[in-house]
Image 1: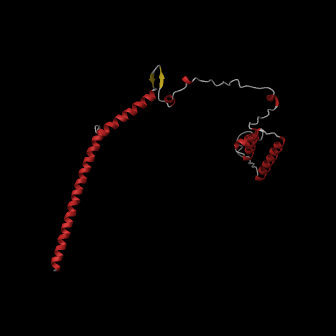
Image 2: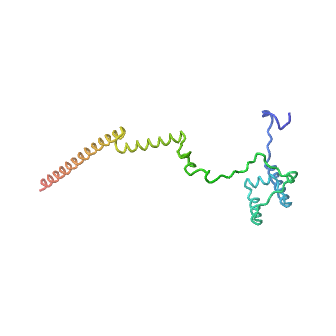
Length: 193
């Protein structure tokens, strides 16, 4: 079996590229790019590199475009430069009339108008129904007509009553405390005199 093909080769030793070899390959590629740039050619790999984020080549190309004002067209090599090939599956964009375009409401998915009547999809109808029911329930809840609202109001009434009782009790204790402190002060004054 050829060396580059086949399964995992579990028992075979692994080979790794050393950093020195990687550096040599990178330098070689840079020299080739510079040589092509001097000749005025660009290979496909150079174009992909510039699309990936190579700053130098993108800056150079943008400067060239600014100077000329029109982007530079690539030279086609071989037969493709002589024969113009068209995509048989290409469909020219059809222009629509303004009246045929979607209305803003339709683009948002609200409704489609057919013959003057508004027609909604099942999901849209269900969503509207759900929103209306929720709004109606909230209105009844605020008026206190729902079971939940009645239970809430009853709970609030009990809490309010408990707080009032606690406040009365606290007031009485404060009055008793003031009365007892005043009484003690009077007793101390009478004992001291």
